[in-house]
Length: 274
Ligand code: LER
Ligand code: MN
Image (tube, rainbow, N blue to C red; front, top):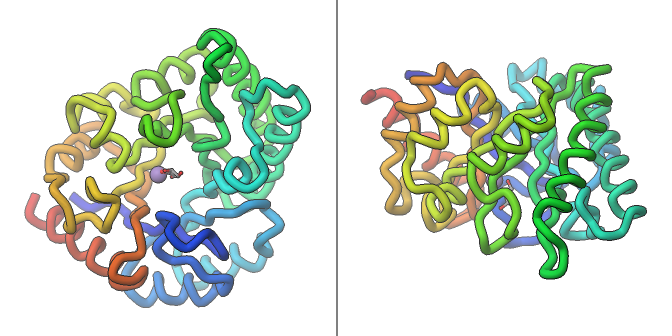
């Protein structure tokens, strides 16, 4: 068993974000990853113009580093951009920001993550209306993505961050209703640990639609620091023939670099023993 392993990397995210490598010098971050045996990096960006696309593409290619994905959630946290917002203008601006990220993703041949930017279900709005807005936005984004090489994944996120799309089955419902192969499932073991009932079933349910994985322990520290036995999860990934990356998304404890080095070692040991 041998999956590609990467890390979520930010430029200037808030200190306690689950982005263990958080440094404006993205090239230095790429150097660290390449020099320490990682396969990929995920770029967490407020706007795609926060990086020089052609330059980071060339730099990572030279280092043999894959850019797996673009994290987009900062636009929700810092600018309130949600594709299911009650405000049509906010929805429009959120979709446009994701289209801008898709332009970068097309250049980098990677996915964009719809995490927090899917918003949540307000008390006074029926779920069906939020689903309608989500499906409408995803259809527009998949249509836009079909003109390039970028793809889209929807992350299942736990109840303490959102009340919308917390489990694989909910994300799969949206994917089925959008009906585009540009749209996939993104699972995160930290969120799964709170919302799912089994480590294998969500993976098997997602099957060939699973295109991105974040891995962290139950306490959101690096895999190996907490209670989770990742073996059944990794076995399920192998069973579906998962080909994308396992991206470490954890708190920078005791510090970012130590965390991801320990996480890499833990996952590699598990893969080696399976
Ligand atoms: C992003 O990948 C994630 O898992 C969320 O918890 C971030 O808010
Ligand atoms: Mn995640």
